[in-house]
Amino acid sequence: MKKDSTLVDVVLVLALFCCSTWPVYSSNSLCKHTNFDEIRRPHSVSITEFGAVGDGITLNTKAFQNAIFYLNSFADKGGAKLFVPAGRWLTGSFDLISHLTLSLDKDAVILGSTDIDDWPVVDPLPSYGRGRELPGGRHMSLIYGRNLTDVIITGNNGTIDGQGSIWWSRFRNKTLDYTRPHLIELMNSTGVLISNLIFLNSPFWTIHPVYCSQVTIQNVTVLAPLDSPNTDGIDPDSSDHVCIEDCYISTGDDLIAIKSGWDEYGIAFDRPSTNIIIHRLTGKTQTSAGIAIGSEMSGGISEVHAENIHFYDSYNAIRIKTSPGRGGYVRNIYISNMSLVNVDIAIRFTGLYGEHPDEYYNPNALPIIEKITIEDVIGQNIKHAGIIEGIKGDNFINICLSNINLNVTSTYPWNCSYVEGFSDLVVPQACESLKERMFTDHCSDCYNLSKCIASW
Image (cartoon, rainbow, N blue to C red; front, side, top):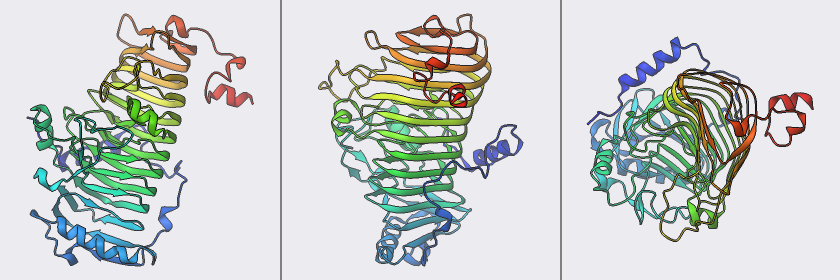
């Protein structure tokens, strides 16, 4: 079995940034929700004051729980900071509180316990109706919070390591009792910053804001072995006003996956993901997509802007996943300024993804997929430019492709079905159903197309 990602991998990633020719970090931020730099907590304690031992062996769950319980008394006095100094701090799951900064030293490593009993079981998400992998509950994330306001998780490139290999083995051996945990999950929370950290070896999806608003994720590195199962990097789920910026992600699944609930449960819960910015993202995935939308999208997904993207050595660059039974919608998606190297499929839409929570979903609940714009893309050594498959009787419409130049190795660069749209300056030439040229009278059909904006 392949080993977990290690700090050696982190050093290699940092070296990659230093020597790369594409932009990764910049002071030109698109994340404008809150000026977190101005937040200064008037009270601060170290985890060592609560008996924690950073030897990588001693279990410190109680120390984290007791420290946060103590700091809750300062929530109405400007909040507080919990500092994790250099060391290897083994712990099970623990809850955060509002008005808290969890701050890691650059040489601090929070380690997830390898004892499954240290990860309690919590209720399934109402928009999923069950655990994502198995009926029933799911294991609580390592760092967890719900109904919170003003939460910062940060550090000078400190590390949070889920030690996920034990979970991956149980998944592969089909010995899980409940759905695997995330590294971080925040529910029903507002005003969240996650920044300047390294995340390693999550048991399942790594960072999962669900039912949240005003979330900023900046300057984080997410690593897991390329064959580790379902180790998504960042998954905004039924959340709004999310900004993801200056991140490097290399995992065994989607680097970023935007979600909003699963089939009849997501339709009933009816909370969309909307107003999401992805800016300056670099990474690779050999099994999945750089940016995925779905497949759980039953509450709707809209107003997603992704710009300045670089994917390499990857399976898919951009993918939309859905299925009859999902309902919901994906609309007003804009992706631009993307560079690709050694990617199997640049653009992939899948209308028959399957995977349903139970037999009670409505197969006649068809998704609406419309107004997807992808422009200003270059790619080298691309196998397929696009595999775009809609649903019979439910065409994906107003798919707009502009200024795309891909060096494609396949004899058949495009494969399209049940899709309608437009294209302009696309090499190799787009499939027949997308060949119609874009003119100014198509501006209402093509979301946020730059040539339309320039003409207004």
